[in-house]
Image (cartoon, rainbow, N blue to C red; front, side):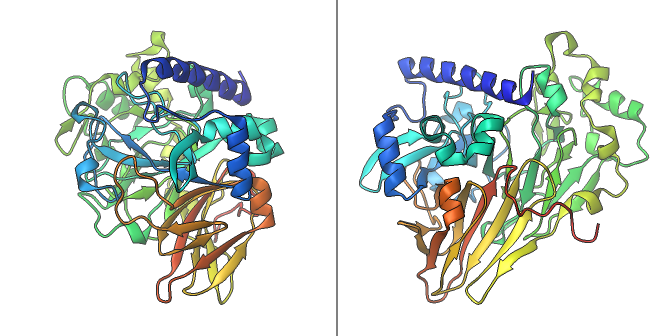
Length: 435
């Protein structure tokens, strides 16, 4: 199947789950609107910009880093059996792959109708109603919708050494591959948690048979797989590109992660910070006849990229200035890949700018307050679970091309936002500086 066919198939499966969950009430947002007239009215009133409702996601592993600006009492809002909330998803038209107990719409973004009502509709439904008016003709033709999402990943402890499947390997189980990118915002990292370093790949001299020997004991003893890897200390205000098929163990740093529309993993490390992970996490994304097959599980690794002797040179992403003036500076923070892109925009105190982009995008404010088009905009300080915010937006392609007026109403503090794009921004840098 082609990538578009897999996307359409995954969409139909999600629609079926959502329809079934609507009957049982197994949803985060149980009363979402589906009225096309209301969706179009909100779109027009926002001048092509939607204000999004916070989408918090729990995970069955890890410990909450508590840097998501979520109220301290709400980190177990999904119940103790679901684990703590460690993620907030942005501009998402897919649901998290989060186990049998998950709500059907976990991770999905919803659009707020107004500040005066709690009514909302899913961004997924808005894409269906508005199509290329929202995301543009190119993305609709190629992907039948919006092909990426972003999130804040926030764990107190480092994550296990794992990989996301390539498109070829994911297609064998009817899913999409997942390249992803990292950026480490200074505004949200007042502390680094337990580990301020991320492992990527393996040492170039490692023998493949040694990897297989380690993962073959996943159910018996500590694999100690990171003994064979390489760690890089985190530098705030920079990032990385992680291709599908590259194994990595992320640091316990709050991370902004623009990524492809997928949530597939293969976990090679079974004990991290004393937490033990179940054996099915190793091969749950393998065809049934390949589960437990160590050679097949090993083949999910892109060996050349994992053992690249110049890994930092090829995949580290320092910021690149896109444009600047006396009123603002905008930097590319995710670039030089064919899937996803992102920028960081800083508007200086008391200044107003019109910012134009050649593609639709989602964004999240992380510092300051002001206005974003017709909306108030402010970085969240403390959110209750289920509360609206005015820090997250989705901008249609036409509105992006026309330009959004952004005003910093503070006299002293910068206004900072992160902007995530799909693969079609015409100005994204294609290479890393110095390469």
